[in-house]
Every structure is written in structure tokens, then in C-alpha cells.
Length: 260
Image (cartoon, rainbow, N blue to C red; front, side, top):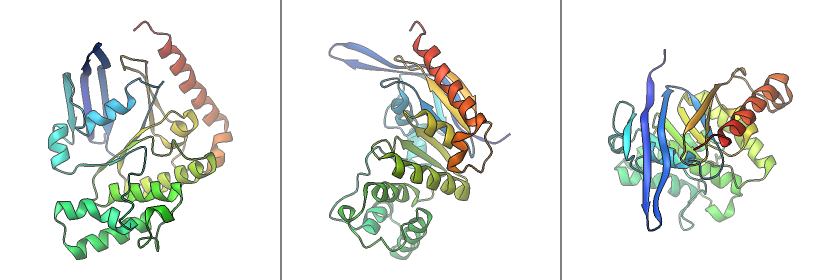
């Protein structure tokens, strides 16, 4: 069995607001193993992003236990155990693409030659060789998001957390980036946690699909993919892909019908 890199045990999170408590997560149990590609899917407001943020120590659970690489999320953050890709690229317009990718490395104290080597390597990984000297505004939305992924990969963390990174892109660009992300995952062997609203995207990318219920966010199903590791885009027309997509859709409907 592969090593568990993310382990959640009865994780709950309640936000205190002026209008009263908001129960964002409730009794979330999940184990993510080394090399998994796990997608989180559910209706808006179900806690997908909140759970990803707890893994990244951007939110703190109010109950339960969460471990990342055998550490607390805050310890994992300090140990640089993960890279995080947000919904928007978040690139500084006054820095070149290489400068944006290099910024966290500068903050971490990497030497200039080491930074340059890492930037070149991750630009190649995301197929942006030759674009390091460009500014964000000179790149398409899809290229900017690839630069954002490169920035998260630059310090070579074992875990990559991705919060709907392709949600704002058109379908053609999204398809290309889905293919590129799968290839990157195969090359690096990283463990990926991926938030999405798209059933086809979740089925196409994942080794496991985590279905979450409306607030308070709970895991209602974990569906293991039966698709082969090699996945051309036209696999989405295959009977097995259609069957898996139907299983995810039914799990979403069942979860939405639960009395929460």
C-alpha cells in the first residue's frame, strides 16, 4: 500500500459570523495516498475549497485531526510540503513570468543559480520554454495558469493542491490543460488534490473522486477510477468513462437529497 500523505479524521470546521455559526465541514474522513490524483466535487458552498484550505493551513479545523506528510498542516506549510494553485493565476504584472515563478524561491532563500535552474525546469514541464522573459499581460489566460502551476512546482513539493485552476477558461483551452496536467502528473509522480465543479473533468483526471454534500460539507462517496493511466481526450466517449460520469452524477444527486 502507498504511504498516506493526507489523513483526515472527523475533521469539522465552523465559522463564527455575525449571523451565527456556519458549519462548513462536518466529520470529514479521508486518506489520500502517495501518487493519488484526487478530485473534490460537489455543489457550490459544500466545503470543497474549505477542505483544501485546511490541508494548506489557510483555515484551521475546529474539531478532528488532519495530518499532511505525518505533520500538522502548519508544520507541513513550514516544511514546504505542498504547492498551491488558486482559481486565478495571481501573477504580478510588473514581474516577468520567470520573475513570478522565482519569487517564492527568493523568499525561501534559494541561491540565484538554483532559482534559475528551477525556473527553467518548471517552464519546460508546463511547456512554456521561451516565455520566461514575457510579462503576464503578454500571455493568454491558459498560459498564465500554466505559469501559476509552474510557480507552485518550483520548490519541488511532494503535494500539489489545486483550487479550480481551469474554471474560468474556455472548453478548448481547458481540454488542453487537462491533458497537460495529466502528463505533468505522470512525469512528476506528485500527489494532487484538485477542486472542480465539472463531472467530466473530475472523471478524466482522477484516480479517486471525492463527492461532497451541501453544507455542512461531508464526504458522501469516494469513487475509485477504473480508467487506464493513459487517457487520451477521446476516452471521454468510451462506455467506461460514461459509466463513471453517471456514477458521480448519481452520487451528487443522492448527497443533495440527504437530510443535513
